[in-house]
Length: 218
Image 1 (cartoon, helix red, strand yellow):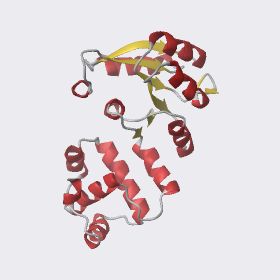
Image 2: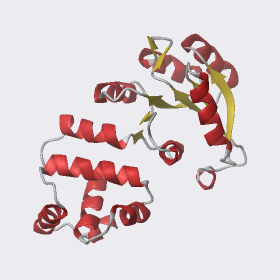
Image 3: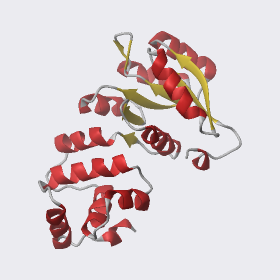
């Protein structure tokens, strides 16, 4: 739940920018269940989004990457300049990791695919509220393949691998690390790609050889 992560008496204000009314309606319905969240505006095109952010001053903007055939990427700096402290989470159908890399470079704090589970969006919002960046696990796996040398595991991947090596299931790992099941699956995909290993036995053997265990979670 988002509420227990939001501090202060004010509700977390969110604006929705998407050129499909049905998508905005779905997002509004999802966020309505979160007591500490308030959807304060909806925008259907980029000019309206820029004007609206200036007028409404939301804390978070959920931004579609393409609206009415126009890319929103290059508008991210202008949107950030229009509201001090604005956090942008891109919510898109674009799976190309290059788009994610560019969106984060321009200042977005999250990049999430529209086919993500509902809880994935809430996790992304929580992370952004905490000052962290959130990247869709599927995109993260593809970026890792492009950007990371073989065997270069992140701290979180080491944690996941340590739990795999000691026999934890994906669901147990998700509960231990306070992340979604989909996030764990994404981390496993990254680990398998980086290490060029597939089975649990192979991953466990590699972890043991390199001194990685569940203690890595601490």
